[in-house]
Image 1 (cartoon, helix red, strand yellow):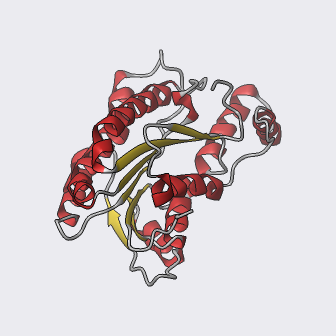
Image 2 (cartoon, rainbow, N blue to C red):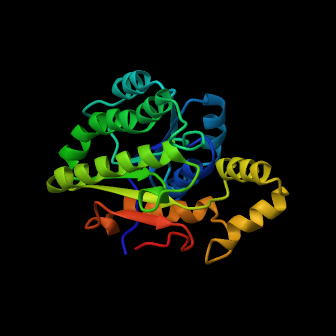
Length: 262
């Protein structure tokens, strides 16, 4: 099975920590030259120092605030050119704040739409010329299992993640003839700072201990544990590889079986 990414260039968003960082490390370990993209340059430089370079890759960083789509567009367009493009794009951005949909201000939906879909779209449009020219492209969106089954208490996230999933499926149909695949990978409960914050919020709301809230979450997962970010990254890296060239337009849960629907 060919999962060798030597000679491929990958742009990994939200790569200063958590799932994004894990994806960057996995892609680099398979030989890809990785560009880290987030808003915190200091954190990105620290991650860059950790990236494997077994194929002599020269990794790099780009800095922009994804809540400002115009800034993302400017940064990426100033970086790519006909001789410098990316073969792999990992779209990944921290989720909106929790809360019910019906009490959320309209501005929260607009901001989340710009943070996720609009910024993602700017990146895709900037990277497509190179992918089309080479006949190889892998667009992988880190979304949420909420696109299959809405998660209580995440009203804005459920709404916007669903929009991104539909956008991605549409792109998959349009870009397939160019050898470009578009897939969504859906993390379940993964051991990240965001999960810690969600569990802490539930513990306070339910007036229970953090330990009890954690156990309650694990009890809903058939595997009775949270995912390590590296486990998620392995799935994303496979979809980025030549071996996954005939897989496109899918939503792949990496959730330990928690999602109850097919």
